[in-house]
Image (cartoon, rainbow, N blue to C red; front, side):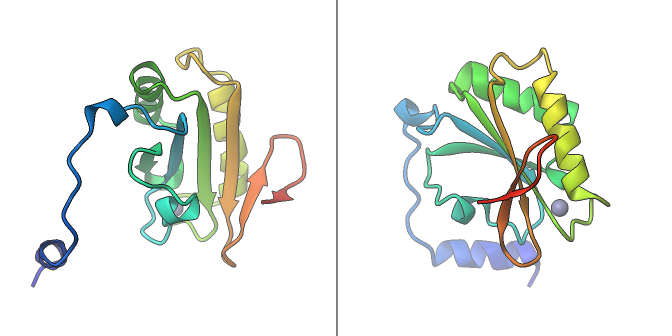
Length: 144
Ligand SMILES: [Zn+2]
């Protein structure tokens, strides 16, 4: 059995999927989360997200790439999001220094003229020990 077949078998045994509610297209929290695609990061569980709560954008490292910026821009213009949460993590296969890269990403978002809303942008580092620490440019880490 391939990995995809395994997932489809699990889907057959899963709960019925809810229909897509067009009225709920805009995330209720008005937050877009950009996180690393690492399978160990359960972003939905991390923030207790339910369907419709937030846009979750994932790529290798949770990096602010041109594609990620396109998605964040669309999230703000079409989805009504106003805040951005970045999540990087220790033991990342895509990043050598995830905390330093997170600061660079926060700076990149703050300086991006492509984003209409960048007043609330926060970055978090998921540690090997399972803590979520807020990282602020120019400031010491603060536990969350
Ligand atoms: Zn990663």
